Amino acid sequence: MSGSTPWVIERGAPDYPECLSDLDPPERPVLHVAGEPRAVAALDDEAVVTIVGARQASGYGLRVAERLGRDLAVAGVTVVSGMARGIDSAAHRGALSGGGLTVAVLASGPDVVYPAGHRDLYRRILDSGAVVSEHPPGTRVRRHQFPARNRIMAALGRAVVIVEGAQPSGSLITADLAAKLGRTVGAVPGQVGVRVAAGTNDLIKDGAHLIRDARDVLDLLFGVGVAEQRARLERAPPPRPGPAIEARLRGVLDLVGSGSVTVDRVAADARVAPRDAAVALARLERLGYVVADVLGTYSPTGLKPAE
Image (cartoon, rainbow, N blue to C red; front, side, top):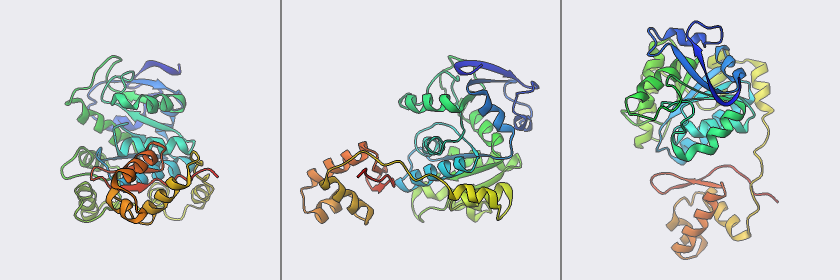
């Protein structure tokens, strides 16, 4: 049983993830699954990390989540998240780019893509990882289903890492559930005074582990200074080159990397009209070279233009 056709794993069956037995009682005694069985089997390994965070994430948060997902996947860690907009989808993309396993926990049925715009990401996850849900195929998303989904994500990870989260937010609920289940909770620090960083900064203040990079997560999983895992991380492949771009766009990309992060700033530094700066930034965003947050601030993704 593999591919996009969902199947059922009953609680108590040999292939039912043992870590979910900590949810007592479970909301539903079965798990509906689509994708690769080996990805579900990997959920019982020690090396499983749940990464969640804000939907309306900053460019900084998206870069951190994608890099964490990628580097952890390279180190052999299975990355669990919820396929939501923002941090969740960035973590999945990172794990896929690192060639590792990633598992998406959905509040809908395993065959219902939510959000609908993530259909391509959903297909990529099915190709090498898995999608799991407590709900049967065909189940549409309802608001009350997300808390139960958060319970599953909290239980699956040996460690749960929050990358940006407002106060209050679903991400902080997941962190609280994880702590109650005895999971290790970590958080990525954010800029003081920024709404989406308030929750993670509070978590760190209250005792959550500070997460700067994948090494910090590996230390939580395996103990400080695990040479083998760190050596694998150092061998992470460089990012694939992006599509070729003309010199004018390269110049704008260089400006963003140097700190010109708004349309007006780029326009002033490049000595072009604001409209031309906005068009250039929009093109760079479509090509994957920059991302914009909800405040209209641009950040480089780290993708390098092909020569």
